[in-house]
Length: 325
Image (cartoon, rainbow, N blue to C red; front, top):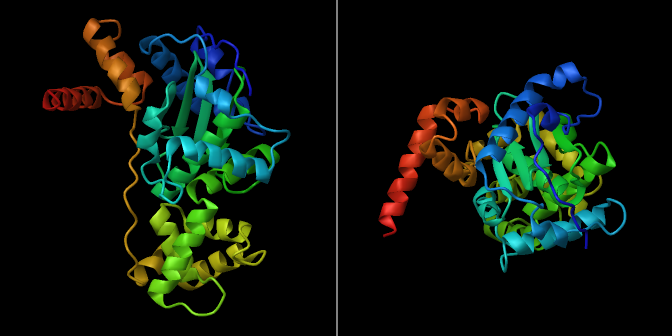
């Protein structure tokens, strides 16, 4: 198993910003997002309880050699057993909420950025950010960043992912994170069982998997058509190049896969909820504001949220606490 060294808290936002790396992107292009991410993490570490080490559960996930497709499948299956114990077929629609049970993990939105996602280890915590996009895209991005978290994190660097980095398998590290996300969101057992049931219900005949089955699979599991089709191809349920061919067919003839699904009156996509700021972090934000350690305006600016949102979430927590007594 991999052992992680103590994770001290960087003393300045500049030191935090230095941890982010985006290959091929200049410092001037990175600057706005870097400043926001560094400010967020810096503020979070001021209100969260101090930690000396990264979460112990990370020690359970160690690469056996180089990043490979097989390693991505293995680690995704292992991680799924932790997040969805005894639920190998369950869609991961509630993944953001399930992750709240993992100590030291803070998942929040990355607003107003060209980056799809980001992740960094700092101060003994793991921070994962997902930009507000099409929910299926956000879910896959979350899985992608988790792939980086379990296999790639060090204390000196972080990951920023452009749209071109996710779903493109552009290099070994990004391809690994893509494969991890795909396998986690669409386990082989779940894909096989779901497609079998779909084909039974719609009366599909023949051996070939068509666009309708994949559209339903994608909606049931909260992923995009492209992700579902690529997963089917990886599992040899489609011929090589079949995923791209089906996607091109849908875009040429229907505009995009979602329009095709709507035209077929397929069941709507289930709601995937992403908190703007991690509820775990917000609990400590409220305590910090109440004690006067931080001001609402300072914390709202650093977390890229509003003072109203801070007070609204505080009131919501008070209601939940009162109803539990």
